[in-house]
Length: 258
Image 1 (tube, helix red, strand yellow):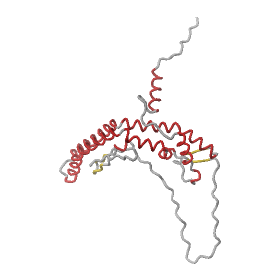
Image 2: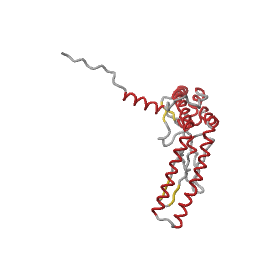
Image 3: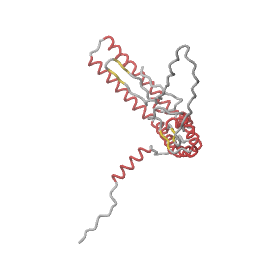
Image 4: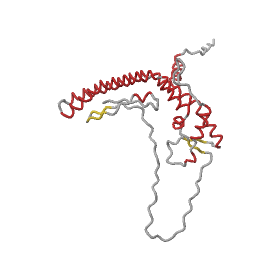
């Protein structure tokens, strides 16, 4: 059965839009939700064991760790996810938008019930060979079309919740730069880099906890409900740029010389 399970502990609208992968032979259909973050860990293997009865040798001293001064590493996504304002907003959103979540959940279950017999027939026809390749393709396309329509419908129902998520993210983003600068000043840091392109680094460079402390002090709580007519910054900037292009030129025409 197609399953769209919400994750109430995360409080995200996109978590109600998770359709699993349907992979049946040459017909592969998927509607992917937001991709989860993948953490990469660098594992250092221990050295090979010494041969039995090795000659005695003086113990090697552990080299002192060396740090490049003025450099730190900070992960913006991890800091936001751990912020008090972000976590409290996720919990509050479940209460503020509980009616929208309940309606979307009910509709999700209804869609599952409609899709289940179609998917079962598709699998049975493919296993038994009772349908031609053309008929199987038509069934697959019909199921995929219903899935896509369902995602669009649920996105519309959860629109206010998604807008709330964007509003909270923007409030935190507006304070993030100030929090980073404050943490840099206290630690004497002159350059902060993201960890995504680094092969490995010592935890002594990690500035996450320092930035998080500053962020929590500057923004202990975020507003969950956006003002009437509010749109995310990207949409506001795009609308302003379009309006500027459509506005008539105010430059005065050049005077002709006789």
